[in-house]
Image (tube, rainbow, N blue to C red; front, side, top):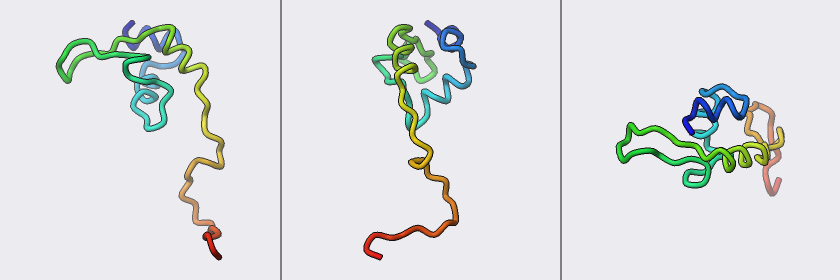
Length: 80
């Protein structure tokens, strides 16, 4: 299934689906949830509906305290 149709099934914008796939922490895995159609670097994606839906639904987001915010607050160093 093409990305635009997959995004519609998930109820998200196609651009959001692309960002989620490219993100360092992603619910999607190449070969399981999607594959490339063709051999060139400009080929398109083909999504596996059931697998991608399951991955998106079961994905565990990080707790807020685990996300680096680069705040200026001083941190306690190990051994201090």
